Structure formats: C-alpha cells, structure tokens
Image (cartoon, helix red, strand yellow):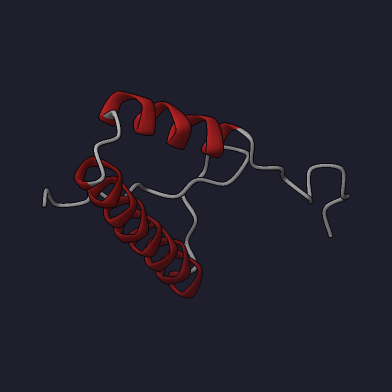
Length: 75
C-alpha cells in the first residue's frame, strides 16, 4: 500500500490550521477513511467488480457529502 500523503489543513480563509489536536483528529479521520476505502476496493476487485466503476462511485460519494455547517454564523 502506498504511503498516504496528509495535507496541510487549511481554514476557509486559506490559513493553515494551527491547533495540533484538530490536526491530529483530521489526520486520524483521513487515515481511517483511506483504510476503509482500500478494504472496500479490495473486496470489489476480488468479487469481480470493475475497478474504474468503484473509483467513480467513491468520487460520487465524496461529492455527495453535505456540509451541515455552511449556513451557520461564525462565533
């Protein structure tokens, strides 16, 4: 498995997130999602599914996520 390159997390203003606890949570979430997605791809390929279709489904899944906070005022 290739090494996951973790991003520099940015605020909506484009500044790097500076809180180490927040960065740790975000990185942990991405690592968990990657492992789950890898396991799902492995299963799909082993069961004879088309890899390209699986990747399209994963992109569509990410694109379909809703931001429940986008209309909230900042504190």
